[in-house]
Length: 113
Length: 113
Image (cartoon, one colour):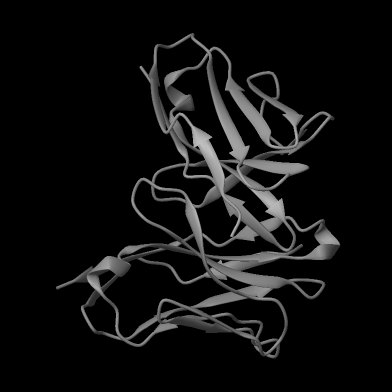
């Protein structure tokens, strides 16, 4: 199957700093990527849909100015958590669509101190 | 709207026991159905899928049959191993919702020796 990578796998940052997470499709082109957030022992919450060359579509309740998404190429989408706070600590997972499937990255564990 | 209802966990089984994790769905169209597995600290991996009614997905000894009449996609394995300990997510994707994925809440499985 298609491979999706994420970098970094884990990051620890101070409150108030910004953190960028990269999501890459390694062996295919992805016009659409998704960003999810997962709280401990809970399911995935879709945050936004990232479309190559256009603005991301955010789910209700997700602050677009806080979670900046850029899908600059067919193989790369980035999520930047701006001015991170401890409540932003979570597991962030990206995925890329190859209809009818989605392929998921390994996730990024963000800890904000 | 489309949704997935999944058996609540956690589930604890002895090695070689039979596993069933129930999953039912609601969809307006004809969805594709999936089971994903998430090992601790990792992203989601596709375990198996079925794209039309009566299809059986299978992988690594796990099976699930797409039952349109009961709108179900129950996951089964005849003899679980310790290495099967993980969280299992049922999901659906439907073309008439733009292939957006809907996940169940996840079922944590622990297999004890």
